[in-house]
Length: 69
Image 1 (cartoon, one colour):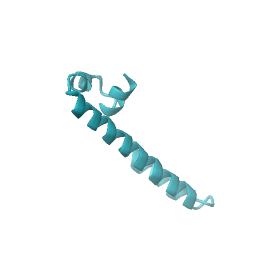
Image 2 (cartoon, helix red, strand yellow):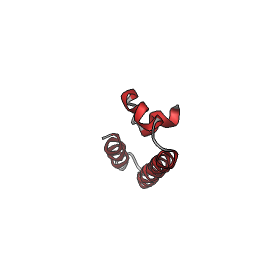
Image 3 (cartoon, helix red, strand yellow):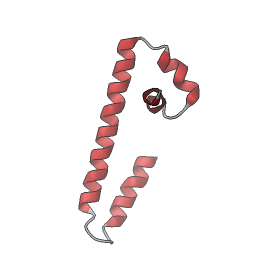
Protein backbone atom coordinates (compact mmCIF):
# COMPACT_ATOMS: atom_id res chain seq x y z
CA UNK A 1 0.00 0.00 0.00
CA UNK A 2 2.98 2.29 0.53
CA UNK A 3 3.77 2.06 -3.17
CA UNK A 4 0.19 2.92 -4.12
CA UNK A 5 0.24 5.83 -1.68
CA UNK A 6 3.52 7.09 -3.16
CA UNK A 7 2.33 7.05 -6.76
CA UNK A 8 -0.99 8.59 -5.68
CA UNK A 9 0.93 11.44 -4.11
CA UNK A 10 -0.47 10.66 -0.66
CA UNK A 11 -4.03 11.26 -1.88
CA UNK A 12 -6.22 8.39 -0.62
CA UNK A 13 -8.97 9.31 -3.09
CA UNK A 14 -6.67 8.25 -5.97
CA UNK A 15 -5.88 4.78 -4.59
CA UNK A 16 -8.78 3.07 -6.36
CA UNK A 17 -7.58 4.44 -9.70
CA UNK A 18 -4.19 2.80 -9.24
CA UNK A 19 -5.54 -0.39 -7.66
CA UNK A 20 -7.91 -0.93 -10.61
CA UNK A 21 -5.27 -0.13 -13.21
CA UNK A 22 -4.13 -2.94 -15.56
CA UNK A 23 -0.92 -4.56 -14.32
CA UNK A 24 1.37 -3.28 -17.09
CA UNK A 25 0.16 0.30 -16.61
CA UNK A 26 0.58 -0.02 -12.85
CA UNK A 27 4.14 -1.30 -13.23
CA UNK A 28 4.91 1.59 -15.60
CA UNK A 29 3.55 4.04 -13.02
CA UNK A 30 5.70 2.44 -10.31
CA UNK A 31 8.75 2.54 -12.59
CA UNK A 32 8.12 6.22 -13.33
CA UNK A 33 7.81 7.00 -9.61
CA UNK A 34 11.05 5.16 -8.83
CA UNK A 35 12.90 7.09 -11.54
CA UNK A 36 11.37 10.37 -10.36
CA UNK A 37 12.51 9.67 -6.78
CA UNK A 38 15.99 8.68 -7.98
CA UNK A 39 16.36 11.89 -9.98
CA UNK A 40 15.15 13.95 -7.01
CA UNK A 41 17.67 12.29 -4.70
CA UNK A 42 20.43 12.88 -7.22
CA UNK A 43 19.56 16.60 -7.50
CA UNK A 44 19.52 16.98 -3.72
CA UNK A 45 22.81 15.12 -3.32
CA UNK A 46 24.41 17.35 -5.94
CA UNK A 47 23.17 20.45 -4.12
CA UNK A 48 24.40 19.07 -0.78
CA UNK A 49 27.86 18.34 -2.18
CA UNK A 50 28.14 21.86 -3.58
CA UNK A 51 27.19 23.37 -0.20
CA UNK A 52 30.58 23.20 1.49
CA UNK A 53 30.19 26.27 3.69
CA UNK A 54 27.43 27.87 5.74
CA UNK A 55 26.97 30.42 2.96
CA UNK A 56 26.56 27.66 0.39
CA UNK A 57 24.07 25.84 2.59
CA UNK A 58 21.52 28.39 1.39
CA UNK A 59 21.80 26.77 -2.05
CA UNK A 60 20.98 23.41 -0.51
CA UNK A 61 18.03 24.85 1.42
CA UNK A 62 16.67 26.41 -1.77
CA UNK A 63 17.02 23.06 -3.57
CA UNK A 64 15.09 21.36 -0.77
CA UNK A 65 12.32 23.94 -0.98
CA UNK A 66 12.11 23.58 -4.76
CA UNK A 67 11.70 19.82 -4.40
CA UNK A 68 8.85 20.34 -1.95
CA UNK A 69 6.86 22.34 -4.51
